[in-house]
Image (cartoon, rainbow, N blue to C red; front, side):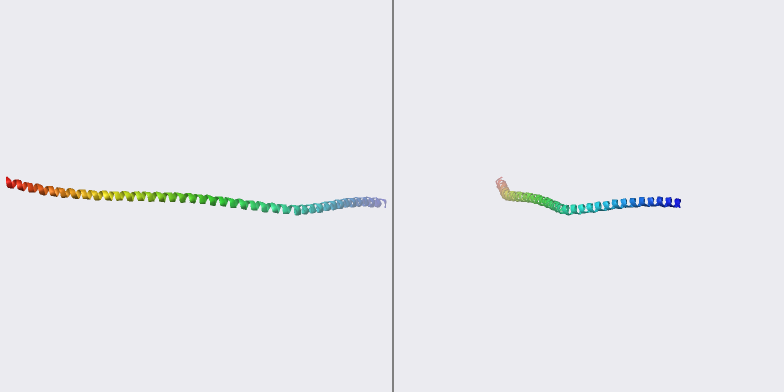
Length: 148
């Protein structure tokens, strides 16, 4: 019986040690669970308090980007309008120049037409004078031949 009692006492002591170890583990698990629950509450609170700020920030950034895009589009439109106005001015100036050149060309054509008419009259008078001179020469030759 003594050996059995020693063995039972030893086993009882080992079981007692195991129970104390399990209880310590259980206390530690409860502490960890409470810590985890506390950290979860802190995280939820942090998320609840910061989420509106981040949402507002995200909306502000989105609005800023949209405004920047609109400004870029307005600047591009203004540049295109400016270029179109400049081209329109150039086209207007070119149209004026073309009209001036056309007017000058018509004036020169009128001058040339008048000069051609004067030249035609002069040639006609010269032809008449040449015919008249030729007729006179023939007349003089006939009269000279008749006298001679």
